[in-house]
Image (cartoon, rainbow, N blue to C red; front, top):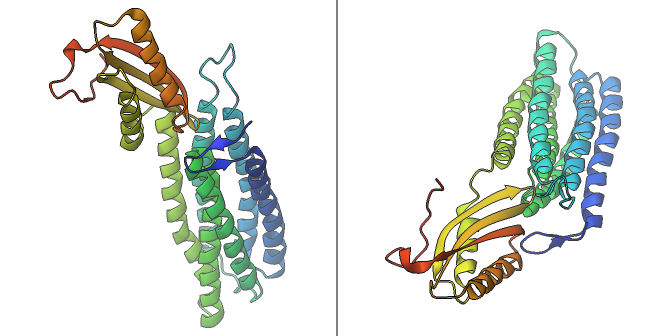
Length: 312
């Protein structure tokens, strides 16, 4: 895989693999730390959080593997490439966020209804360390996901963010329990339960965006307008009749109807269509392929500008 365009720079193959490996390695290390400290410090919430981190390892593997598989070029069996794998990995990431929230909520409720001692003081700095590490990691991964417009990577980033949120909530709860003393032992469990709401919301958002990609929903107005503007800038193009764009992985497939002077020869019209395709592919818009339809310009709109029309 060559470097991937991001709109304002490039993310190399090496940096993407390194980021994915870092995400998985951090999950493994923190899982061991949480479970060990949780057992020693009598924090069952921390133990449950460590077990939940084990599921994050699996989720990260699926998300990053799905993203890299989606970059495979088209072949005889898959003429449109493998981009939809990325959307499916994004759906999985969103579902696993909901599952993680469910697990955390279950253990929090279990701890609330079960009398127990307040956690040991040394569980607090461990949780603060988790918050710092996970916040930093989630920002890097979410930023990469936004640059690449990858729901799978953004989903993995939100997994780390949700871990930081629940750990932060647990840290606040443990602080209250340690300061408040008797009667405040379950403060960290209530905090973790409330943090689950944020995790669920982000899981649903990731799933919605990934489902839009699977169903070829309309792309953003900015991308659509930029494509039309670049196409209309090509010499010989009177205006654009129709333009449809669908997202596949981190790339786009474009179908565009170009209006030209009806007196042109087939060869001249074909050349204009070729120039439009060349311009769009070279326009740093992450376009994978363009389908050009040449139309006569006599039925153009009165103002000569592009107006979106429905395909019937």
